[in-house]
Length: 290
Ligand code: SF4
Image (cartoon, rainbow, N blue to C red):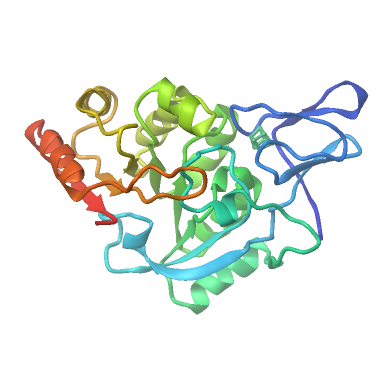
């Protein structure tokens, strides 16, 4: 495997490095990877294992990202790698997110220029960083996005928004449209269900909005965990105060997956959430997986 030296890290004592790409700020021992399993310390230097190594490449309708209000009716060259920096027990995509690069795993070797060429060959007006968490391959995404813009191709980010401010400052200005996952509007939800913190995600939403990136937000509604009225109202309050009521919101039904066996979301729950939002004047509400 060809290895790409990572950005956003610091050397510490005894060959240990600290990754600064996301809020976890992992301390990584020599020979080990960080929490996301795709950033490895080799002899005191941090490398990105996923740079140039997508494991899933496909052409999707842009609505599948989901983006309902960005270049509707077009196709997007979509790709992702292994790895994720959240630990969601309900992960709907754990075969990629919790997988890592080993001698037995299959992956491709595709340079940024080749990704752009592939996008052109398939006549897609955009390319999408998606499937796993793209923040974990931010170096690759940045190099691709720069080339894509030179070729007149739009860039789409489908992300959990869990990224350090330094990395976001480099990646987000190169993004044309983003769908950010809001897992659940409370710190309790993020700590119990995702082993993470809420505030960095809110910071990312505000940063994308301030940059005028086309922004849509998706929440997977999990019965008994993030479907109560108080959470929904707090979430709508936050959007109204920090973004605006026209930001498209997607509320999707959850299905049992990975370590979570809670029964699936009933459509009535999503209809109720939609009506709460519409009564508040939110104009772009979309329901999914029903
Ligand atoms: S990107 Fe990965 S290695 Fe870096 S801090 Fe986040 S979880 Fe840790």
